[in-house]
Image (cartoon, rainbow, N blue to C red; front, side, top):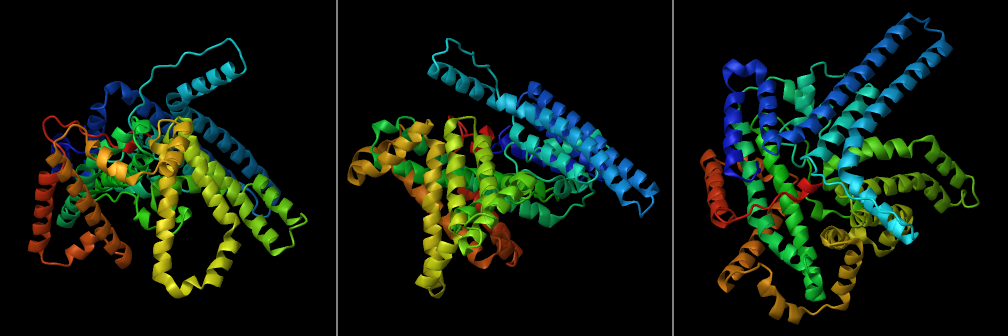
Length: 545
C-alpha cells in the first residue's frame, strides 16, 4: 500500500475515525497496532515473520536487561553505604551480565539485517577475491527479497535495547506495545528512526480529538504529496533515463542528472516524511523531525545535521560518542599529546579532534553500507567521512582564512557562498548514488568535466529525457518541474530566514484563508501531480535502504 494512493488515504481516514471513537478511547494503542499489522500485511504476510522475530528478541532482551538493573539496585540497597569496594564489585558483576545480554540481542537483531541485506554482497566480494587469487571456487548468490522497513525497525530496536541497558528507559512489559513501537505504520516504510523515549509514550497514551491536529496533519500531508507527485516523480525519469546508459549521453547530461537527482531525492524523501508525519499528527503523535532545509547548509557537517536527522542522531548517540570517549580512542588522544608536536598549537588541536575524526570515518562507512550493499555506497560513505575529517583537521586554517578575509563583515554573501560550496560537495557525493557502480561513479565525474558540451546537450539530448512523450508534453513537464522547484525553494527560504514553519504563519490568518489555501493546493496537486491510469507510481527512494 503506497503512501501516495487513494487506498492509503481511505485506510488512514478509517484508522483516524476508529482511533477517536469514544468507546475505544482506552484502546487507542490497540487500534494503531491493528492498523499497523494490516498495513504491513499488504506488503506480504511472510515478511511479518522478520518483524515479529525482531520484536520477540527485543522484548525479551529488554525485560532481561531491566531485570538485571533492578536486581543490582536491590542488592546495592542492602549493602553498607560505606563499602565502596562491594558496590564496585556488584556493578562489575551486573555490568558484565548486562553487556552479555545486550551483545547477544544485538547480534540476533542486527544479524537478521546483515544476512538479508549483505549476504550476497559478501558472496560477491569473496568470489572477486577468489578470482583475483586464481582460486577455483565460486559461491552462488542467495535469492532474497528485503523485507519492508527492515533497516529502520532494526535500528529502532537496537537503540531501545541500548537505552534500557544504560537505564535511560524502563522496559515495556506488554509485548504488543513493543510490537507497536517497532511496526507503527507511518514510519515503517522509510523512518524516521524514533527513540523509545520520544515515541513510545505517545503511542501508548490517551489522545483527545483536536481540530488543529487534523488541520496541521492535512497541511503537512498535502505538502508531502506536492513534493512527491509534482516534483520527485516528474524528475525521476530524467535521472533514470540518463543513468541507465550515461555513456550514450554527453558529460553535461551526467552533470544535469546529478542536479535533477538532488531535487528528486530531497522532494521524494522529505515529501514522504511529511506525509507520514502528517498522518501521525492527525492522531496527535509527533514524529521525530528528519529534515531541516539541508540545501541551506554551510558545511558537509551541517548538512548531515539537517538531512536524515534521525539516522544522524542514532549514529551519533550509539556509535560516534561511545567510540570517541572509549579507552582506545583516549589512547590516540594521549599518544598525539605526548608526541613531538603535542605541545604545539596545532598538536593540541590534533589531539582533541583526531579521535572524533576516526570515529567519524567509521560512522560514515556504516552510513554508506546502510544505504546499500554495493561498493558505490561504501565510496559514498568514505567520501562524506573524508570531507568532514578534513574540515575537522583544518579548522584552525579555515578560521585563520576567514579572519584574514574578514568574512564576518560580508555575512550574507559569505553565507550564500558557503551554501553553494556545500551543495557542490553534496552533489558530488550524489554521483555515487545514481551511478551503476563505483567505477561508473568516477567515470561520470570525469565525463561531467571533460565532456561538458552544453550546446550539444540542449539541442540533441534534452528533448528525450522524459521518454516517449510529445514535444508539448515534454515542454509542459519542464515548465512544471522548474516552477515547482522554484516554489519549493521560495518556501524553504522563508522558513530558513524566519525560523518558522509555513503552516504556523498560515495559522495566524483567517480560517477561511487557511482552508482556501488547502483547497487550492489540492486542486494544483490533482492538476499537476503525476498519477492515474497507466502511471506506475514511483516507490520512495529510501524504501530500498
